[in-house]
Length: 274
Image 1 (cartoon, rainbow, N blue to C red):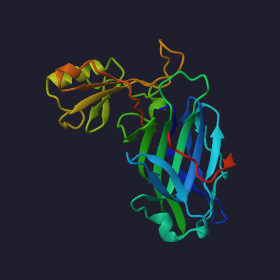
Image 2: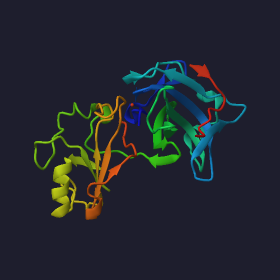
Image 3: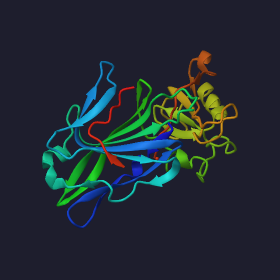
Image 4: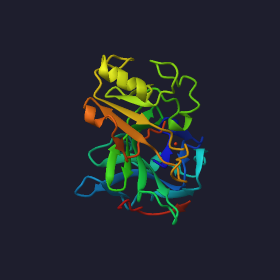
């Protein structure tokens, strides 16, 4: 994933006049585009891949903002103003089927000389608003990652503080088994990132239980920092290696990118179709 909004940083800030604006941080190794949809319908193709989001013609149009590459960027304050009085309260607080009160989308804008495999890379965060008294706040419902024509659900990884952008700087980054190697392997299904790949194979052959919660292990996934240089390429690249209980799969490498990010002009309907 070359662009990502840090989901845990998303906040809805009140400006003192009864209106709100979004505040969050995001990361991008290439130029990127961020779009915010309010009260929108998700339209999908036959493969359940989002094509685009549409809003009612009588509602404010979504806004699109372009940014340069950078890690830990702050979304500019007050550039996207939300006036709750322009919407029905129920439309802001309840999601149903393919309708969502708010969607935040960040898409990577690849340069013309890009040589990688990604043709379309897009993170989509679906949310709603919670009304407490007279104040609204943001609530994240789910997050997905669109890579070319494949959609992935994004879940939390327990053991990475502040997302993969801070993976190398984590002060508690050592494997809980050997206390020597950096932890780089996630245990599934519990999603604890607590092992190095070498120790994960020891766990698999012995107890096959997560050392943190003792859940039975179904899969190990090794995650490398996306921003680490790739010796075979000049571009940033994510690497995932998956090891399961099947001996034949121990050395299998996946070409799919994995990451959980803990990272203008006006348009009507930005098209997501690859």
